[in-house]
Image 1: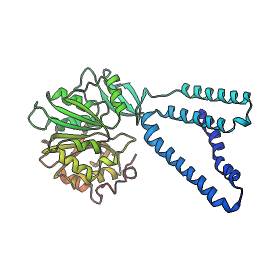
Image 2 (image 1 turned 60 degrees about the vertical axis):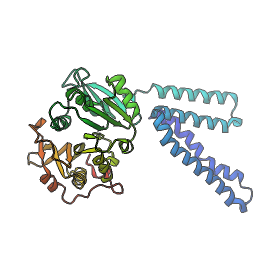
Image 3 (image 1 turned 120 degrees about the horizontal axis):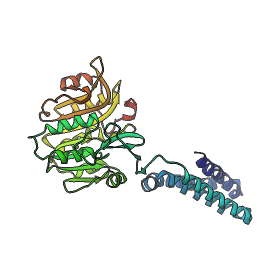
Image 4 (image 1 turned 120 degrees about the vertical axis):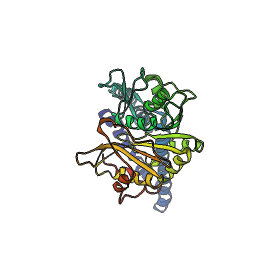
Length: 377
């Protein structure tokens, strides 16, 4: 933080004085003030647009944040030197250049907790303390998923067990399934499906290509025609999935700090329903705690789209939904037969109970999806 402040703030402060200084130098007649100030304002607006869109569409997707900050600092120092070369002696220019190099070296030397920087996340891997042969994937320091590279049947988190129970009950035991997974993480569930239902075909829609590459390099992911990974925003890549082609779609794009609003609306669910077979199942993992406004809104959205909806989650001592991870199951056909004993004492709420839970909640739509305000963190 200190290095960033020292590298950027003084230079930015000097550059902020450029517009009024140039306006004063250019203004020789008050009758031309409108033309001069208007021209400078136009250039400033164009620069702001380039900076905004360049950051969002170029720097963020292509470079780690640390590299972007370093590059911008060097560019600003270069602009400053270019503007004031005539005012500095040789010693001053050399001193400024050395200061820039030193700032760059200090920035690069700063400790980073990330094992890798994906396009959207700081990525770390830690050993699962409850299963030493498994490794946990952390995104932005929050636990995302866990995978045992020696035993792909391992499901380490309760929500994965709940989803796994639902998938295991689809169709005849052991028969292959066609699945779409929305959100990759450590690709735990796609690997589990391949290991438990031989011959199954799955496609995982993951927005972050660098995370997929990290999984291949660090977590032993091996994609194939039966276990594919498609990179891109799932709202777009789902459109390429054939209609009535999937036995199950698993929505697993939530994390403790990321709420994908575009994957929670009525319009998104219409595309999910299109891709599912007539009796296919949509399993959505989400995170919310009391007062459960986001869970209630999403459950209301599912009830408005599918004939049958079930909720699997942890209940409090009063029997009411406590929160944390919640798995919502939805289908226009019968849902997989009643869950067996759910992991960690989870409770199962069928459609009538879900309908009582969502009373007063408004379904989410593309033009009304305030998920950040609804979620209780």
